Image 1 (spheres, rainbow, N blue to C red):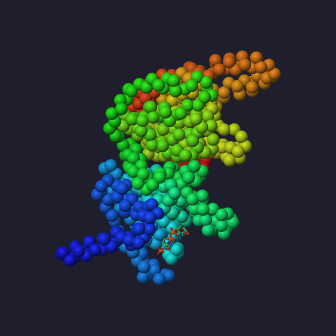
Image 2 (cartoon, rainbow, N blue to C red):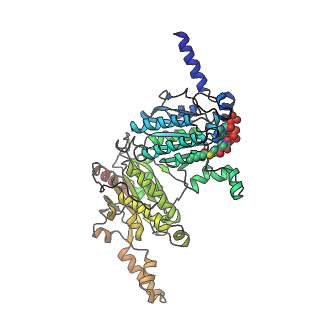
Image 3 (cartoon, rainbow, N blue to C red):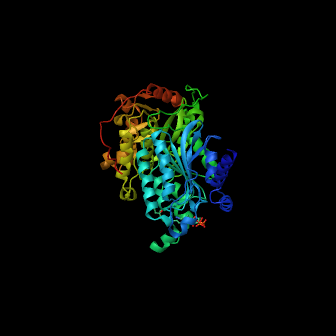
Length: 510
Ligand code: HXC
């Protein structure tokens, strides 16, 4: 028996070495952790159980029959994060550059199947060179199997991708179909084809970082949701994110104990909105002052900053927060902001996470750049997402709610459940100046008359009461009481039941 156990330990130790000490050292010298080190940091201590560590590829082409490494370039299994079950696979760059073979794909799909069957989140850690070139169509087929499972799991269990090295070719599409992608600055990059192919096809000279680094994907393309400075920070933040997410679409949001009283009054909010309606203020301050312990996990913080999205908690329960940001472009809705928020609203609705919306929006951004870029379709994405959402929706209008953007931002008319306004709210078709210039065009030559008309329009519409008189606003609340009012509304909505008519799926304007 002793010999058998020794043999097992030997095989395990060999498998844990992956591509060997030299390649592990090379990985470390680039500032990257190995696949197993990453999993160790991500999961609760000693909770990870590895599967399939002896699996080898079956390829014999190009001398591959002689080069087999147990595990075949991916570490798979399950463990817990703060006590909750999570499935994980992590590409091992030390083995054939983490490239995907048929056997490697089967390890991943086994874990994907288990995650779906057992309704628990799955996290993929990417650090790989794409399809195993020596395997040809077997590798391509393997990707297809992974993609199919990504789609079947979408909206059922949270799927998270962390990019911690190269992520090229076939490897990019699986993350792209998951719920969130996170990257590590300076060591990770994602692209369909790398700089060499780009040079050949388009004659463009570009570095890997310029083509698909963390900065590009978090601020330009919006492919990635956030970037971190190193592997350790990224993995610890994933543990924090997981605490906000339900295990599946029927589990309900996790509830964490909080010492922050729901009836906390914050007098500083009474002066958050400046007297000058055109002066900005930081909507993040409001979010921090309303959320439990000011804890806010922001998503896409570097893209379309005119809208802020992320997770917070109210009385320990996770909520999704969507908020116009007056600090950037006056909080206007443009194509990027609409797309960003639409996807987030849909994520929340999939997983039964209530949505709290803070509104200060001067409308949709006009101009050829936006119209040529498809603002109508992109704006409609956000409208569609809010409109179809059946989760509890609580809205607070702090200042401007103009035009179509008023309707879009979780208004009463698209099934907002509880709609509050601060006394500083202005709910109108457009700003006073623009409105007067249209309806009193013939008086434009008379500056005094126009000024008087603007004042008159402001008196009539630059307040929340016209909407409140019609019941479109349920109550005009004191800013200082926002936390308690939102918390009470969410409590009241805890058993909300609302179903959309049966359909195979909807046809959101993509
Ligand atoms: C087999 C691979 C590999 C691959 C890397 N390796 N990529 N082996 N198939 N796709 C191996 C290398 O031979 C090397 O083995 C080890 O991994 C490390 O690679 P290096 O090139 O030395 O590392 P580095 O300089 O860091 O460059 C990493 C890299 C580069 C940028 C990822 O390796 C690269 O460009 N790889 C190819 C990327 C690619 O074009 N993949 C195919 C995409 S097509 P040794 O033994 O020396 O350690 C695709 C289509 C699928 O994926 C479509 C499905 C929808």
